[in-house]
Image 1 (cartoon, helix red, strand yellow):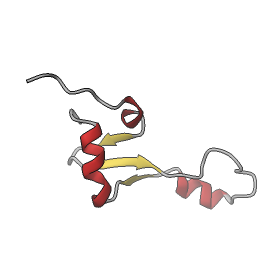
Image 2 (cartoon, rainbow, N blue to C red; image 1 turned 135 degrees about the vertical axis):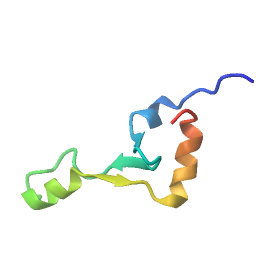
Image 3 (cartoon, rainbow, N blue to C red; image 1 turned 90 degrees about the horizontal axis):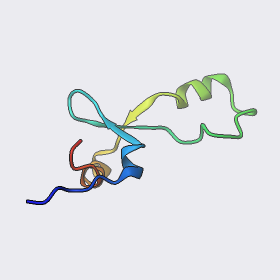
Length: 65
C-alpha cells in the first residue's frame, strides 16, 4: 500500500484534539481590526470545532491526523 500525501495547506489550518475532533481558527481576525471591538476580537481568537459535515472532507486531506 503506498503512502498517502498530506495536503500541506490543510495541515497548516487544522489540528486534532485529544478526543479526535478537528479544530480550526475563526475567520475575520487578519486585518481591518481597528473598528472591531476588543470583545469581538477576543472571541475570534478562540479555536472552534469543524462542523461535522465538513469534518470528513478535512480528514481526507489529512490522512494521518
